[in-house]
Image (cartoon, rainbow, N blue to C red; front, side, top):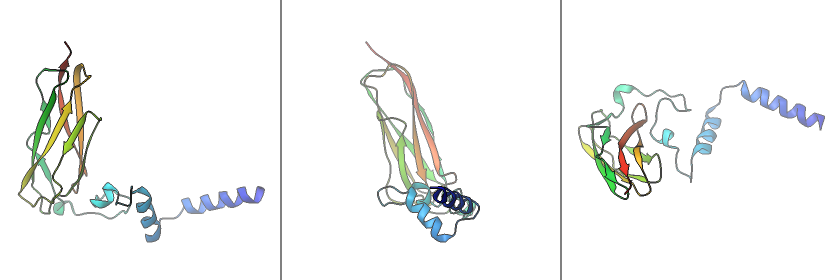
Length: 163
């Protein structure tokens, strides 16, 4: 038992003091992926990822939303509030949106799956189901893309009332 503890301690000590090599980086990348797909941050080549590679910010895609925040009018519970968040790729490379994740299950987002060429635009359609909600509501949508930073946050806000 004593030998096992010493072996484990030495293994941890030496593994923590070394920089990861390419094989370890590959293993770490595979460990962070889900379902065999690349992790979101690895797929979009964000410079702040584990790989320690730097991306030239002048070559990154840039997503610019006309209005990243949407304030909806007072609505009755059960109403589905929708908004089309319009955006444009103002960068020099194609914009690839990997995912658009809502802050809760009552909100969903539909986004373009194909690359958006520089100068072109698109929309992310957000739908918020107010069923069972009451009072002020703020819902967020995190858009993950090959931008710097790789997450852009959209917001829907408004008041929901019950009869």
